[in-house]
Length: 101
Image 1 (cartoon, rainbow, N blue to C red):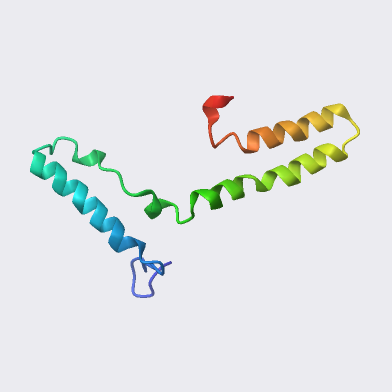
Image 2: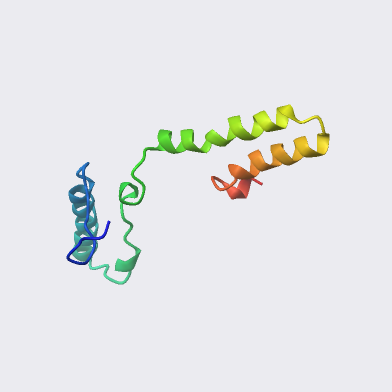
């Protein structure tokens, strides 16, 4: 959300940011103590910073397509159209693990 005075207004109603900063600072400190500064750019941020939903919420969102697409497939009389809807269902979840194709 843009701030009227410029910049970005950072909203953190769940208080995730302080924990994430503490986690990243701990990783940086650990690398500094070990003298391993060559790969500081490889420090990963906690997943909660990028995705604010839980694994179960993500899995449920991915299954939303099953009822929509498979219901349309079940209603089709034409086998080719049915195959298209079943394929669409399969591909809709393919982003989860594309290596399983």
